[in-house]
Image (cartoon, rainbow, N blue to C red):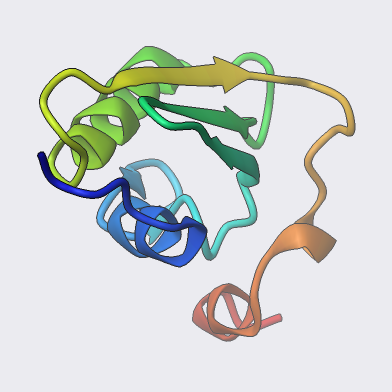
Length: 102
């Protein structure tokens, strides 16, 4: 059986998931709040830039698929949208701020 990835590996694979409206990956946008890895599960708390984001389902589905690509086949993957704390631009990485010219 393959080993569970660590937090860094999960964050790295989530960098493949873009918010198409922002044109940036969800990690650098600061949308990924928490990652908890169990013996046979991965739980991710993430948010959207706004609760009205029309792409939320697609983004969370893409996040689940990205995580599944590096976890053992029977891993339970839960990507939960949370709204507290609300997302603000200060959660972005320097890479994202540079991208947007901030």
